[in-house]
Amino acid sequence: MSELSERQKKVQRAVVLVLFAMLLFAFNMAPVYSFSPESANEVFLTSLNGLREKNELPVLEIDEDLTALAQIRAEEVITKFSHIRPDGSRGCDLVLAEDPDAMCAGENLVSGKRMTGTYAAKAFQRLCGSSSHLKNMLNSDFTKIGIATCVADDGHVVTVFLFQG
Image 1 (tube, rainbow, N blue to C red):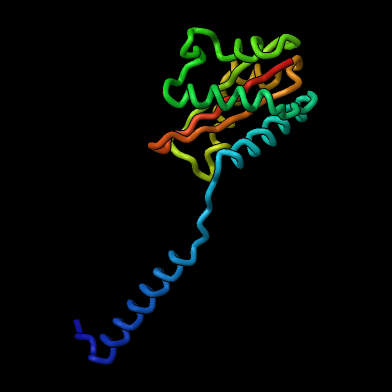
Image 2 (tube, rainbow, N blue to C red):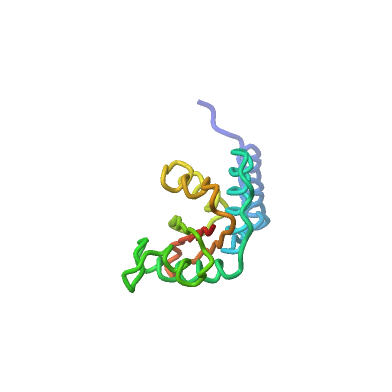
């Protein structure tokens, strides 16, 4: 094997340094995407209503009162992932107790390890893969929804969907 000339070694070093500098520049210039609970909720609502439209069902209207109740549930669920509330009642009972005009209610819960740009899409796919969650999402009796996403200090994420009809 022939040895590299001094000039070839210098060219190699220069190429390596240029490539290294390009990598550093690329990583520093890469866009940083922050994904908030609010943007996740928007993705969930859009995905859910798209699913309902495909199944020839009316879209669900976001309801501020249901969203406030969903936020309460999300804060409960972030500490203990359960449809049973700390007081022993079911999550959907919260809807029925707060609105005497409610004829029916449902609750979907989903979680993830951390909030990323793909959290909502992946979580929605998991919900669609569950017959009980899909049943709530395609229930023609439901007309309103509240959605809340909560992020724990350790980065764990939960989303609560409260349905009402």
